[in-house]
Image (cartoon, rainbow, N blue to C red; front, side, top):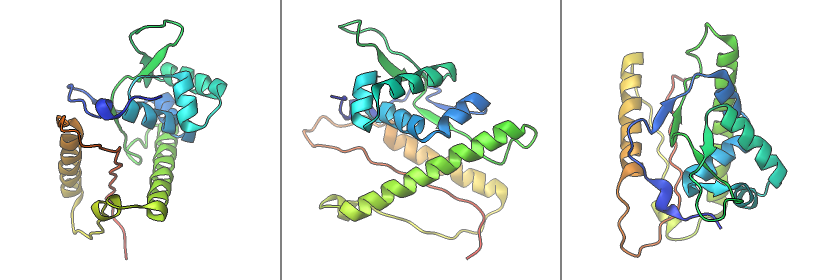
Length: 197
């Protein structure tokens, strides 16, 4: 069974990495690889079998995806613990950041970044739909959505994004109290971009 929430926090310097490598961006654009990264983020180092069971994927498929992700510098073998036949995998960094639309001089990188962003947007939207369809107390009362129109210039939008990301990272990096309260993995996602009503 995958580990519980103890691996959700981390405050090491460099725990969020800017991605501009085409191979890494192409990995992020594959839905199953994106799910594997999320599982490793939430559950921490895991074996191929644990990941396959958690995500209902074939073990051989997970092995292949992990190899591709190692080659892209996103995943690495974890330090050996216990049975050496059960290799565990971990993230190289806990957070990734990329910006579609900023790499116009490299069409392949631009295409990969846009594809990765679209996969993430689709997955986030689907997870929100799943939650709305099955939300129970107390989570249905605690969860929230915000919809806000702002009037910003590009520099202000970048500043807003940095402040919002800092808030999210502060919550992710916090020391989780050992108070016996059961906590669940919570997805928080935000987007801000120019648009018209």
